[in-house]
Image (cartoon, rainbow, N blue to C red; front, side, top):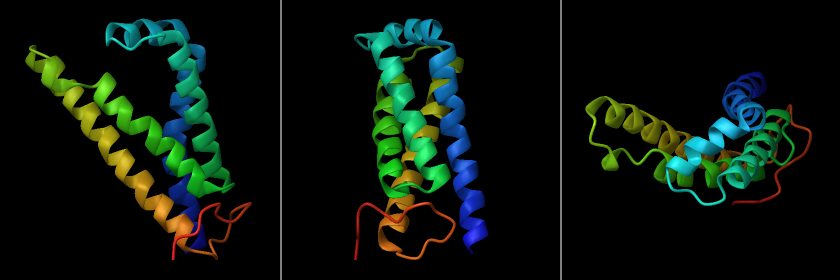
Length: 138
């Protein structure tokens, strides 16, 4: 079981760590896209969200307060779904479909992050983590 949870954590975290890398290496392009969606202080928000992705992803990957890492990722993906992928505002069918896919992906990732939070915060013996949970759900 420990190995399966570790593999799942790696696969889950890689998506967020790859995205964090993009936030830091393509900041200007991402800031322009973010600004086009009406987000204020786009460059600052791109960098801040990159930090959230990096911290949350590393937390889950390494098992260092992975429950907190899941909450950080949840706080990123749900607002991002509504701010960056508002498919209901798009008139072009292809753009609308692409935004809907990304919106649904973010909502699903938020659900997975919430489930993982509960898993980490409820289980005391997680195995293959560097720390135990920060939060305790009984």
